[in-house]
Length: 140
Image (cartoon, rainbow, N blue to C red; front, side, top):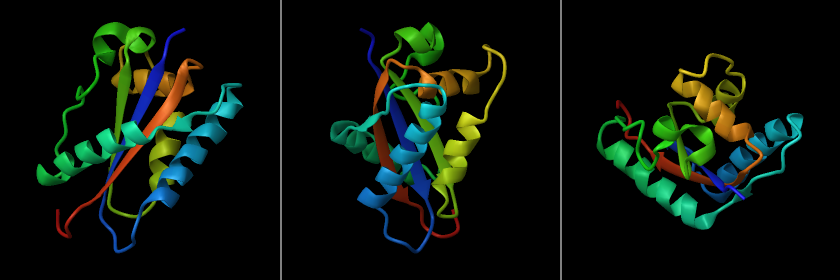
């Protein structure tokens, strides 16, 4: 059985405190959309969340820049054979729902990187989700 892991990283600028509640919210948003495709729900993986949080911190330290292929060989192998897929959302308002909605409403051609992200999110072999949150300083 193939195991798919989704890494969801968020760099955020806002005045609110985020943590377990927001991670659960993002998980629920994914699972609600996966159910529309008849797929099993994902579970939140604490080890992946730690990896995601570490990478979200790196994104903040690099002024919001990130490497699309971090922790992922997805684009070389396609969504079936890769171990991880990285999905990064940098947003300035506390609305991660827009990120999830944008990815799930994507439709396009297989040569587009966003196609692979969409496919991995609805892939039935995907079983675990990691969410990393970090705060951006104002003005970045």
